[in-house]
Image (cartoon, rainbow, N blue to C red; front, side):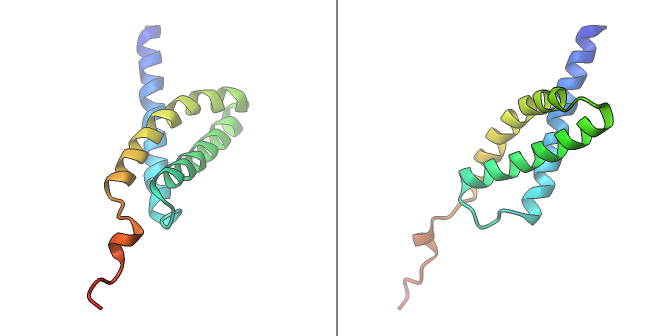
Amino acid sequence: MTLTVVIAVIFSVILVMLILSWLISFVAFGKLKPVPRAVATVLTAWTIATLLYGYNSGSFLFAGIIYGAGAAIVFWERKYRYEKHWLPDDHRTDTFS
């Protein structure tokens, strides 16, 4: 029974962090390079999730720890996705003149 609860908590933490990071990536930090953008996006999602969970449960420390683990996993996913779609600045310059 407890293993099932632990797996459900891990899955839900990662899912919450993925959804928050995905929503934040639409509205913020679009002009940053891939790694700073991934850091800013995930830290913003982690802050929101920690504040909401900590306010509802009363334990901000526990919320920060469990969402911190999910943030680490989501950071690598966001970093990979942003680097895959990144074009360097010299790639966008006008070469026809």
